Length: 291
Ligand SMILES: Nc1ncnc2c1ncn2[C@@H]1O[C@H](COP(=O)(O)OP(=O)(O)O)[C@@H](O)[C@H]1O
Image (cartoon, rainbow, N blue to C red):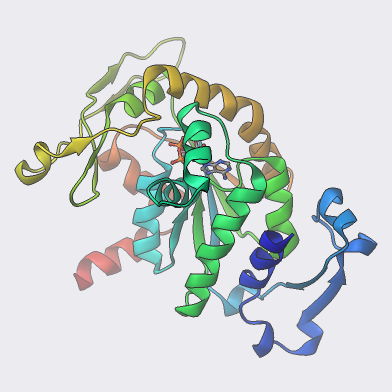
């Protein structure tokens, strides 16, 4: 419960600046607040649920998509373009894994088997990250890798409004190759990909080619792979995605918030098309002109 309350508090950073009419002190125990799961309602906490007018805050977007689809790449580019934090729960988990916290070993077993971390733990990590952001004056976010279960989506809905959910899609064979080709520079932390993907079109589906994203010389000898990017674990992660995370797409589709985006290729082809789909071409032009 502590973790959940922290997420609620963190998601309500402006409570003190809002008029009382915009504060809703809701007794979860009464079950009066839509989106709060029954299990949490049974716990009987009182929570402050705040929803800000989108005109008074930065964007609150979610990126969905299978492992390897490129959520991190595009969410991070958009966060720079729009000046909002990119919060990837996978990164939060990896930070925790590299700590000496007793939780780290338990998490390593889960992650390296391609399974999802329990909702309570992921919410605890996300709450802490949001709290830090609030303390720094952050507003808005692009979430990447959260929510990954219907329950996580319900919890998020219970505390704040999501404006848009971008669902990135790519052929499954490409996803496996992309994950296996992923490399990280152990020194600077930048992401690269050594996979060179060329798939022919078939059964009416267009072909796809993606050039590798190779490291500069100073990183080339320092590349490492994620322990969960082996073929066996990626296949399990894809299976888990279809079972537990894909239903989240339907959850947001039924709310009319889902933007489906089929990646046409690598970054050079996909980025301009994604901006077009998001009506952000002007934004990019202005930023390039200012650079
Ligand atoms: N929202 C979440 N819920 C549960 N587990 C998560 C969540 N986000 C990340 N994880 C854990 O961290 C791992 C890595 O996440 P991520 O970097 O987002 O991987 P992917 O490339 O599969 O999208 C996941 O396989 C899972 O074990």
